[in-house]
Image 1 (cartoon, rainbow, N blue to C red):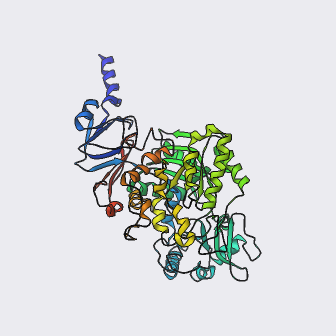
Image 2 (tube, rainbow, N blue to C red):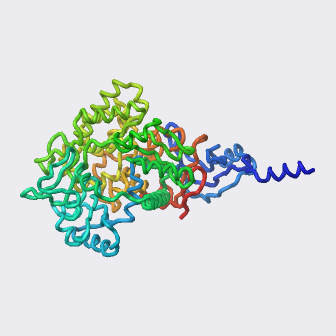
Image 3 (cartoon, rainbow, N blue to C red):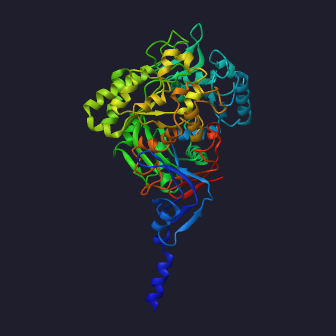
Length: 553
């Protein structure tokens, strides 16, 4: 009798695994299948681990689900697979909330006013740091200067990141702390903007940013946690259940693992080690990490840089800039140096993902892949990528397909850059720029992202840009080079199935199918029925990761 009572008590204390399944029913559901075809469903069921058991009609799903499963009624709302951003900067997204917000500034005086207000409100900050300025939007016709920043922050160093992350605007205090003077040479892969007599103006492009970044205090553990918390909350709010973090180091890796261990990681993170230097040497000791904590975290890629950005004229072009014939932009490394970095990562078993914006940058990296994949043919299985693939010669585009290189592209870059891109490269080179449909027609799989915080992390805004080739205000009318727009299904695919493919995770996430994780979102409007102009305005009501709700509006 005592034994029976004890057994019953133990049984009651244990989770009822067989009855812990959940059925999500009465949904207006859409997903892609494994072959990329769009299919509809009314219900899905998943087990207590968050793995999908069945997807389909309510009757079919109920027949496959265990008896006693919990039922969640979606009341006819739209259910989609969780969206994946294939290129973002997670800690950067979290950090912007703690600095000067310049993304919305439309003039230099407005930006200076924002910096002044932040500086006065935060007298305890040793540095005044901000993000998002864009001299093109300001219609300035030049870069801003240290003297202008001095006019609002003269008592301590100030550093403002350009919208593309490839230039900084600093004040005189920051230049002095970094030891940047008339006699400081331009570093390889970087440029110190100077006035007519050679004095630094306060603008540092690409590798020159390191001269000042090295004297900026590193974030504390508390600041890093606050940034990660803020980024994850924002990502969940816009329906991101996954992100490829494009460049992390030892400290970020440690924090990701801790969050995964403690159930605090509310999106799946596919991380890329930044460069093949000291952090890579430490993080790669045990080889690539394809999956950690039930697929919440992976560290099996490396992020390298070939060149800079178009807006700051740091992107490397084969011919001079159309609007600045004195410059071709900057390749960060000589061909043999870049090849050595890529080979080091490839030999260690990592996926190699290289930032390349200009046609010279893309050409350099395609040449390197051609040489390395001939030397290491088995490495093709890592599905190497070019991040951005923004301006590519028409002759080089087919090489992506031939070499099996994934173009990892960001639709909102095109709609943000439309105000200056053709000025930079002219009417001929623009034909190979932001050329999504050209890539798709040759059979390339595009992994879509946003490059947040440079652009909004909202993937629905990305889908809108991909389909319309217009910005959030509907400009330009008819779309910018609309012939390169994606269809809606193509855009949906590049933020789901093909983003997962680019991380070698398409068997785990990216669609809602039996055996995959139950990562899904609920939206207030039907993505496939709203007017294209309204796609970016769709509100996410709920976000679910592995069958657990991580956001509710």
